[in-house]
Length: 74
Image (cartoon, rainbow, N blue to C red; front, side, top):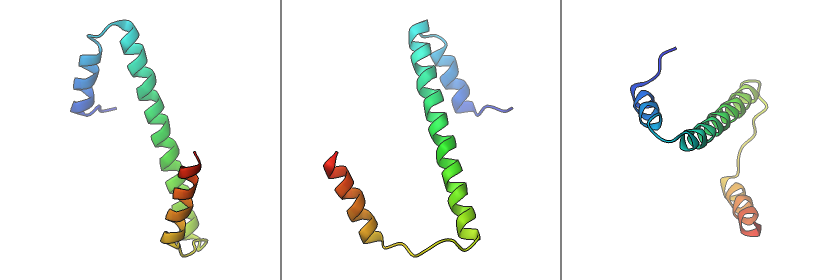
């Protein structure tokens, strides 16, 4: 497995931090990776449904209104 240069640099810098900081950064990074995997799986699922003709037109104004209403209630 090849690690991109930016990640190599980040890991090198993190490795010089105290153990507790490394642990916190490691947990955060793993959380981000899991979120990304979940998002990619959802995107793939959506693409498959579109490929099988299950898609439907999206009313973007209605979508944004519902999202904003939900956000305002939080």
